[in-house]
Image 1 (spheres, protein in one colour):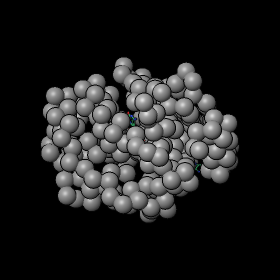
Image 2: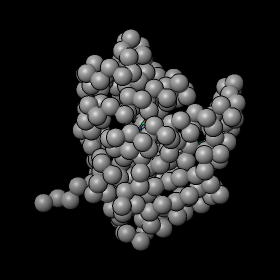
Image 3: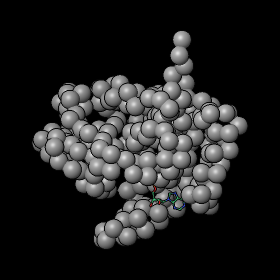
Length: 229
Ligand SMILES: Nc1ncnc2c1ncn2[C@@H]1O[C@H](COP(=O)(O)OP(=O)(O)OP(=O)(O)O)[C@@H](O)[C@H]1O
Ligand SMILES: Nc1ccn([C@H]2C[C@H](O)[C@@H](COP(=O)(O)O)O2)c(=O)n1
């Protein structure tokens, strides 16, 4: 029997650097990338466009099962464009409003079930780097390397502040810290697939680490496990 493509999972709270690190790692290894948070963001965005309430589980389940989305091209390990129902929503789904909506729909069991196979379909050769909240605990429990990446809420808010300011968004540091804390609370306290480290995850606190230092630590775990050939 042929072994399935290897998966490296990177889970953690918002702003810990998962997406950044996963994108660079996927590019460096030449592997596929799954940004699972994008799927929850896309669902929240589509629901709002279609006038579906973010707590209407039966309708959200249907929408999730039939989500018409394409991840187009790839630069720096990330899709160049995300197209939802024919519209380019690459940037639109990155707002804090959409993030808060994503965190709400993600708490619904039927929604998570409807998105499960779509996420698993990303497991293709030569390998997959998957980032999210439950990649190591639920979606890819057999992953040979699970990383749980954290940072203090203050540092994550600071990073998000710099990121959004650089885009020209009018945001406040204290507002972002409140949003991050609210999202942490929802993501860790929900009944299904809560944000938590898998029992066999390695935990990395990036509060005082640069992106390169985080990558270096993960690369040495990859080498230790001889995962990437
Ligand atoms: N170790 C680090 N040091 C400094 N800045 C960092 C570090 N890691 C990530 N960043 C920056 O923090 C911001 C948020 O990072 P990123 O989007 O990767 O976080 P995330 O965990 O994927 O968040 P989300 O779950 O909300 O998508 C980005 O601007 C990124 O460049
Ligand atoms: N595997 C995942 C990925 C994401 N979510 C939810 C929780 C987050 O608050 C929201 C947005 O994710 P982000 O793009 O910020 O990583 O989606 C989840 O429940 N499970």
